[in-house]
Length: 309
Image 1 (cartoon, rainbow, N blue to C red):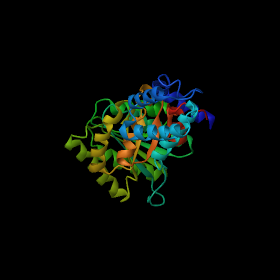
Image 2 (image 1 turned 180 degrees about the horizontal axis):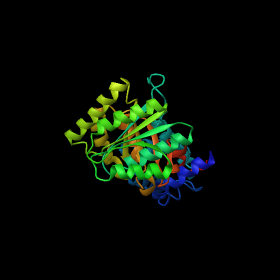
Image 3 (image 1 turned 60 degrees about the vertical axis):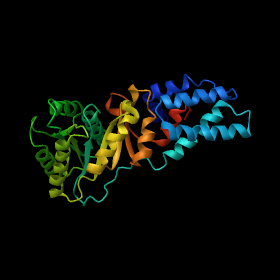
Image 4 (image 1 turned 90 degrees about the vertical axis):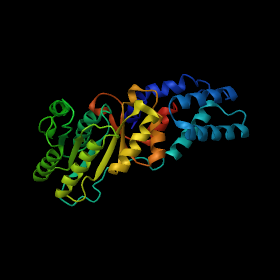
């Protein structure tokens, strides 16, 4: 458990630093004051927690401060962590088979704009599931972007993963169909479909997503059982609008937030969850395969507020 918390702490280091470097007093043992509360407010906005969450955290700390003028930084941090846990209640995604018929693979469609880390995350997820004892087939359905298929093939070779692929420009839905058939015949547990990166404003590419779903449903009417939006965490709250459009057009079932190790805006996932109420399944906390970690409210909150496990 300690090792997993360290993953979160290290992966969110820039967000932690953005807050802690400005709020040494509020996270320390000294009594807080009005100045340290102002500093905390600035830090929470900088980390992209948003107006609503920031105000809730500050209000609860101020209420406690009015009752106890000796309130210390660590106690204030614990109050902030409790508020954040309450805001994120229900946000941990639990990967299950859902309505998948017995003997059929569970399909996870990975969706998102170019640059979100979708292809890399697809490979890391396949590796993670295999490490957990599951069998997985990758479907290289990002046939729209040059070199995307090769990128996924490279990851598959590096991590020794099973992959079904065609060539750039191939029919993505046909690749998804073939991957499902292969997974079914081999008795695999999961199919992970890496779809083409697309702007949420491009109707032709959104239609391709719909076609992939229709073709998969010829094999299994309940597929895809999971449709996850891969969100670049460094974009912060700017991701909310694209998430809304994808959810409206495709019916998302969850989120994966990537690249959190490279940004100080790690609070953005809170705003995205508050807006969409979509569960968060995984966080990308680094470049290695093992840095894709299941989302843990407890570990996230403790890391952000500089609390020890």
